[in-house]
Image (cartoon, rainbow, N blue to C red; front, top):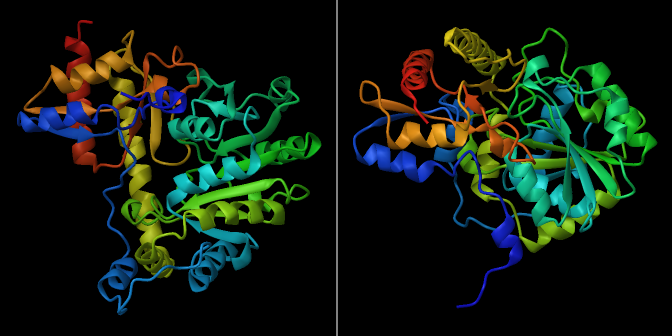
Length: 396
């Protein structure tokens, strides 16, 4: 039998999805599983997007341009302009989800053996995308003790080598919920300009910032316009994970040209998804306001509940809808699997993402989990009750 590639062997499994077979088996046994492992909101998709889906009047579902339909890119440019970002439709490439945008950015900006710095814990798939591009991830450690705050810029610069080509940020952060301040971003902008690096900024969660300070996009930073590649998606903003529409935005014409070559090779982003996403940008402010208020209420309810469980600690996230929590266990991977294979409380159990998968070094985060507060408060309350009983009864 032929051997698969070394790349295929070495790519990491997703910590968010790798326990899914265990969850499926638990459900088959009649156990209810509360999914806190994945960022799939239970919020309804905007009526404008659903109406567009139901009323598609086309006789052919055709290819679109490789960078997406012009009218769709114009809609997205209008959305950014309302948020204070001066972006033209020609600076936007529509992608098959934000994940493809990240992979395109890595392929366009990084050569094999180049290094990309990332604060950790970070979104697990960044590591996979970097490996697919042949690049090396250089983790910038942060700690749950101080809410995963960024180190000083001088600490960042200690990690820069002749092979360093980019810094990858997620703002607000997945999985920690950390929100980068304008001052931090300005300093980061100065650093990438000083060292001639790319700043790849994942801003998928920009609508979910719980600080009174206005959100700052990397696209707003002055003096490093040619360094910035911004990644975005409608998956979380409009609860449209399944239509697979994201975007890559850059003012760097060479990066845009390189991304277009890659985009042309995969032909085009999904037509139907583009139509739904474009219509969703017309959702009223009341839609986003209601979601925003709901996530703050869920966050506060979850964090208070977690910190009441003996041995559990979670800082209060300032953005997105995730938190990293420290548990009184030696191995969260084994604990999360045990929850699905051997434990239930009142006929139910909880699925969480083990923290080790969000670190480049799998020995870090062994007693941490990422929790997504994408369920309603009644379900979060049930999940907290299950977690409390599980910790009390766990015997590794």
